[in-house]
Image (cartoon, rainbow, N blue to C red; front, top):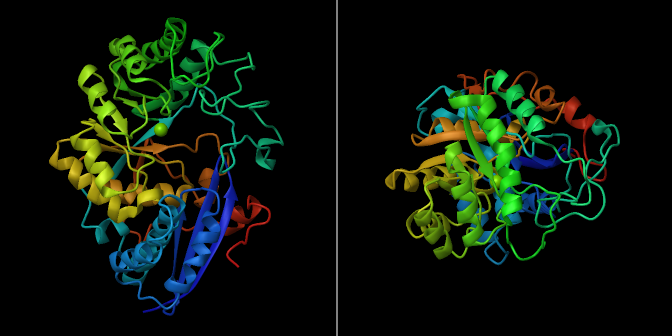
Length: 410
Ligand code: MG
C-alpha cells in the first residue's frame, strides 16, 4: 500500500482546527488533526513530498522519517504537523484492516473514556486566532467577546472589561456540565479581577487570590464530592504566589492545579510540588520525550498532560508509559475538533494510567454535527469496534465553517 495524496483543510471554530487527509492506492483514506499554530497547514503540505509514496503500514517508521527530515526546524509547529499526519495514517490503517485504532495501539483498558469539561472562566463563546487574538466568526453571530487590548496575565482577557463572571455564573456553568454527566470539570484561575495588577511580574495579591477562591468555592459547593474539580493557571505565577494560591485552594480538594508556573526550567516546578499538597499538572506545551521525563523526575509532577495533536499518538503513549513507571496519571490536554478529540480518546483507551481527557468544544455549536452525531454521552466517549477512528468527518459541515484563504482538501 502507498499513500497517493496529502491534503489539508482548516475549520474556524473556537480555535483553528487544522485537518489533514491522506489517500492511499487501495481506495481508503484517513483523517488526522494537527494542533493549530502559525504556518501549520503549510508545513503539513510541505511534508507531502515525503508522505506521498510512503508505505502507511509503519506509522512509527514514517514518523521517524518526518522527524529526521525536519531536524533543522524548531520543535513546535513541525511536531503539530507530524502528529496530524500520524493520526491520519492510523485512521487509514484501521480502515484498511477493519480494526479500530485503539486495537492497533495495543488494546483498550476501558471502553468508556472519561471526559473532563473545560469551563474556562464560567462563561463560553470565544474564538481565538492561532496567535490567540479574539476574532469575529460567522457562527458567533459576528460577535467578538473579548475586545480591546488583551492582557498577557489573564490568558486573553481584557482587564478593562467589567462584566466578569461572578460566583453565580461559575455555579451555573458547573451545574450545566454536571447535569450533562461530566464527572470532572476544569475552570481557570487566571481570570481578570477588579484589582490593580502588574501584567508582567507574575505576582498575585491577597485580593486576587480571594477573588479566585470565591468563584472556585462556589463551584465546589454546587457540584459536591460527586464531580472532580481541576484548575488551570496558564503558566502565570511566581513559585511563591503559586504556592500561596495552592494553599488557599487546599480545602477544595482539587484533582490537579495546572501550569501554575511554566514547565521549564524544571527545578522550580520540583520545589513547588514539594511545597504544596495539590497535584501539579503540566505538559501540554512539551514535545520531547526527555522533557516529559524531567517533569516526572525533577519536576515531580503528579499529573502529566501531553496533547496528542502535538506529540502524536505514539509519543503520548510513550510518555504515559514513563508516567506509569512513576505511578503518575495522565490527563490528556485537548482543544481539538471531533477528529483530534476522538484520536486522543483512542490513545486514552490504550493507556492504563489514564485519568481524564479534556473537552474544549462546549461553546462550538457544530461540534457534534462535524462528527455526524453526538460525540460525548453522559460525560464519556464510548469507543466502538468501528474501523479507524470510528467517525467520519462531515465535509459539508467542515466546508460551511472553513477558514477563508485556506485550501479545503484540494
Ligand atoms: Mg492548560
